[in-house]
Image (cartoon, rainbow, N blue to C red; front, side, top):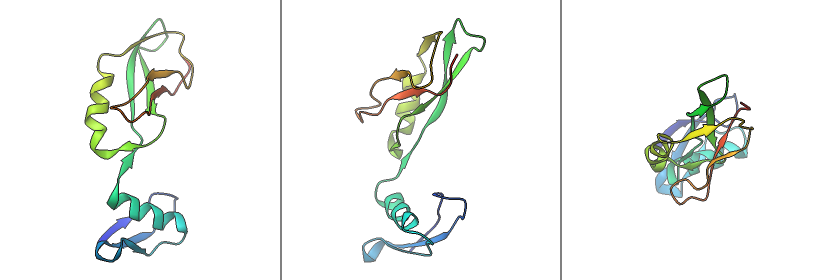
Length: 114
């Protein structure tokens, strides 16, 4: 039995996930908690946030994030992709910074206008 704290909403339910019984979840106050508990143990994903260099703007860094969660095992490879990125202002929220993160089809997008 694995114990987790649900991060789907501010309640922070204490979940218990039974790996031996089909990843059944107890302790959740809503169906989203059950879905989170099962997914966290079978295929964990994360939204990645970081910054990249930008030229011609009032700030030297632009915040970026993944447009959707990516598999947790790809976090370091995804971060490596950002090392050599340098944007040119103007940059708009939602502009694609990297088209496809490690073959997932999910892009990094700008998270601020600069």
